[in-house]
Image (cartoon, rainbow, N blue to C red; front, side, top):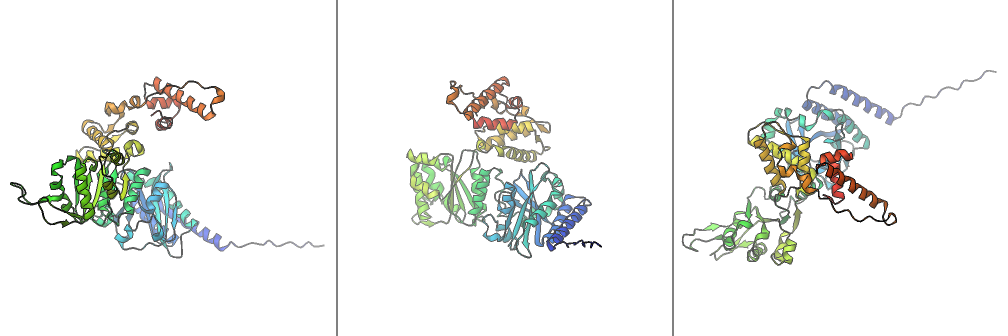
Length: 521
């Protein structure tokens, strides 16, 4: 009896499998071509051109993150110019800050979309895909972005493809390696104002990548199209005037004057003349002079330290804000003004209202938008970036070689409380640039009050009386044990956190976090 052999049935690959295979082969082909490219700029151009074809996108960009300058930048190969963006704004900025992929079906309906780019370039963004780029350490070093897919919305496969291609070049596109190659585009960077997207790149002087600073930057962007009054509160040296200038330069009033007045320096008997102006002949030898309110008409008036004004001066300013007109000293006609008022103070105005030193009606007149600028001890993660920013600034200003802060120096700076905030930090860096002769600035070069911060900031608390085992929980027992071990390590190291951390098997920052959590800092 003959046995019939069952034929083998071969199933042809599906259309989706063929498509996936084609994509993989295309990615491998691009990766092979990458190895033959000699410089980073050309490599970025290759990636954007090839990825554009694979994703069927109208445009593809690779934005590189410069943490020190808080910027994302990209070379636009077709136009041979650089676009620079605030790294804390827009969809690309959100991806850079969070590390999360964002896929948008309608860009103009997305709350994070930064329309200013389209306004400046005349381009219309519809669909958008943005993915984070990471180096071998897992740190975010940039963003890959694709715009306007030809057939619908970008897919998860598109996001994976974009990330795969970017990963092959991420170790070569660290921002710190690109300064030399930017010289290829000097005229565009210096003279093409369109390359600095966003009303003169108004937030570029506000340094910091912490959540608190990101929130301020995003708020400035959210209210950029209006001219409402703003109240800024924060300690001295926290950058209140920088925020005020950013608000002005990102608003429709940017083409007009920004006039700053230090209210603390105004004698009460001169407030009216300085702010509202004076007519000729009011007193012997007095000439006609316009006041700060008139000078700022069309633009922004910044009233710094408004909490230092007397109540009578506050009443006069309140009237001007209500009427939007001023009466010069000795004048008979009210003069209409068109201004935006941004006020700032280092005092808690709500407390001043309770003490009856500040008018409640003026407070609410000014506080249409409220911004609190954080102290450095509230955002210690921003201290290294600020320190390096000031270091570069004063090395250039003093025409000296670029110096470098060692890891130890940065840790000491980050652990200090900075009662004078950024202004105090800036002065310390300025002193270091002027006094340190070598290239490296170590912790030994720092001012003694900063080096001794470990001893000064650590004040061991009295140990509570021991509780019975039945009366305390396991978390409480662990917390008490942590306290004792940390106190002992700090005592034995003379208050030096670095040495104490090594004994405890922690990083210095890990020890500082524990000290703060336990209320020992």
